[in-house]
Length: 213
Image (cartoon, rainbow, N blue to C red; front, side, top):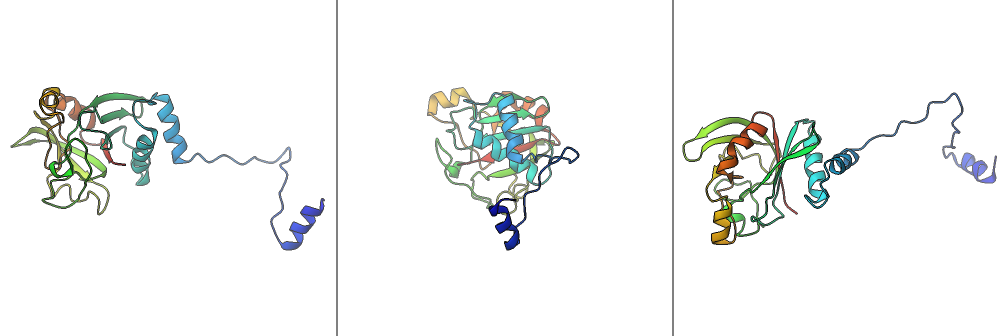
């Protein structure tokens, strides 16, 4: 035994135990960021969505033990002119939809800079949502209910009537005329002609994560 090991033993420090031929080696623990890392690489998302955004969405999904197949991420750190809504099929490991999504009228103009969970704020709420059933909104037509999963951050979504719905102001035509998308009262509104696809992918069990830097 070396002097260093003798000294450690005298102080009561745990001594290293060599692994013999009959010993079982330690199994490496896969942490959440490693899983998100692997998915990010396998879906080849470099240059498509910043890694920290995907990792934040995936971590939020797993934090409460939610294992949805479909994960949508609305990256509100991008301008509204960008196709900043991403829908991932995690089982198939691929991006299945990328499109525009609006933010709340009082969250900002081109960029969303202010966020709120408060009724009447007309601002976007951040965090993780469970996507509920399809409904028909009297004002917007086919829509999806949203259940906010983060206390104090988006848990007033149902009371605020925050839903995913289609809107004419979420379109290339509106961007060309105004230099930005139109804005909602806090709903993540999507192009009207893509609403059917969004419903198909997310209804009753999909997850939506709204991110901001």
